[in-house]
Image (cartoon, rainbow, N blue to C red; front, side):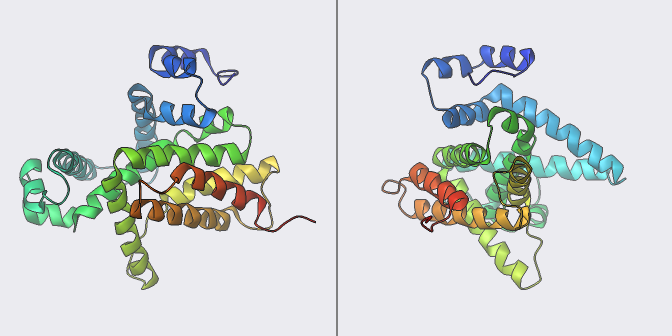
Length: 262
C-alpha cells in the first residue's frame, strides 16, 4: 500500500482530505501523487515548509530585510491580482494597465518587476516548482526508483498544464526568451526545475539505477529538454496529442536508451 511507512500525522492529514476518496477509486500511484500535490491543505503545508526554508537561507546570507520582505509581498500581490484577471477576463483581454490598477501599483513599478505578462505567468509556475521541491523527501519515500519518481513528477506537471494551459504556455514562451538572452550573456535564467530534476537523478545514482559516469546536472538538462519538447508539441495540438503517453515513453527512453540491447 502507498501509505506503508508514512507517518501517522501524514495519514491523518490525507484521510481528512480528498486522498481517501481518491484511493477508493483505485487510481494509479502517479495519479495519486498528482492528486496529493493538488490537494489544497497539502500544498499549504508544503508552502509553509518552503517559507521556513527561504527564511533560514535568507538569514544565513544576511540578506533578509524589511525592504526585501516588502518587495516579496509586492511581487506576490501583483502575481495574485494578475492571475485573477487572467482567469476572469482571459489573458489577451488583460492589459498591464489593468494589472497595475488591480494591484494598486504604478505602471512603472509593475514593469520594474514584470516587463511582460508572460513574466508573471512564469513566476507563478516557478513558485510552484519551488514549493514542490520541498516534497522531494516524501517523493523519495513514496516511490522506490527513479523511473516512478520521474513519471510522478512529469504526470503531475501535465495535470497542472491541463488545468491552466494558457498560463503554462506563457511560462514556456517566456523561458525560451530568457534562454536566448542567457546564450547572449545577458540573462539570469532560473534553474529551479533543472535543480529539482538534478536532485532526483543524483539520488537515483546513489540508488544504483542511474549511470554515474555523467553528472546528474547534465542528465537533468537532457531529460528536461525532452520534457519541454513534448509539452510544446502538446500546446500546439492539445486535443490530438497524447501528453501523458508521450511523457511516459520519454521517461522510458531516457532511462533505457533507444538502442536495442544485444
